[in-house]
Length: 285
Ligand code: IPE
Ligand code: IPE
Ligand code: MG
Ligand code: MG
Ligand code: MG
Image (cartoon, helix red, strand yellow):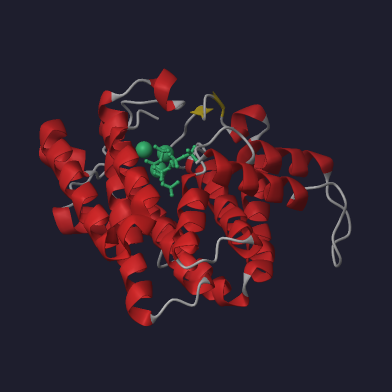
């Protein structure tokens, strides 16, 4: 994780410099600082790690994979900035620090999100043009942003299991699926292996969000770096709401096994990815 984070952060630091790139005019200092606060802060960099490790399975974990990882982390960071806004989850704490709109202001947070989303495609195009459309679809109406819409619309309504699974596959699963698939795309993997990585990314994302929901229900804010015990209060549609904590724990263990099983054909080459999948289930933040 540390190594992937170091490589990704170096790329992000380079991309988020003060000098305008060709076609740009200036880079307003306050907006740039806000973007750097959001994306270079102390997160786990799990999506970059997953992308780079997936690319490594296909001997493609070079600079293109790091660029793709940086692009994906920009989208993730933007999604958190907007997720925390008063109009959405209304949170004050993120990664153990004030949320962006608290540290700056709401308008700056909205614009920092906009600019992180767009710079992601600048970086992705440099990684590989083949990644641009899959990234757009993972982030957009039929992926993360669409899932966030369903998440908000579901507040206070009881969704059934299938609806909850779909919502989570979109808001969280889509970016993890992209991380795993991007490795296969960069490595020109055969279609069956690309499909296997898609399935793995999806399964990983499902486990990840359930673990996040369990952290909200049972964890503490100090370890999580963000407020907990909020989902139930807001009436969020989660599998914890449907199955209770004990039931959700059983489901999480099954999801982790399912994701790890998908890696079996890759043999020991996928040992690190399998470890990461297990880590997701036991993490506290
Ligand atoms: C939090 O993601 C948002 C969810 C999809 C649950 P992470 O837990 O990966 O957040 P950081 O990047 O480590 O802060
Ligand atoms: C966030 O889900 C998913 C995103 C696309 C950002 P949550 O709302 O559960 O994430 P946290 O708990 O605030 O990190
Ligand atoms: Mg949310
Ligand atoms: Mg939230
Ligand atoms: Mg959460």
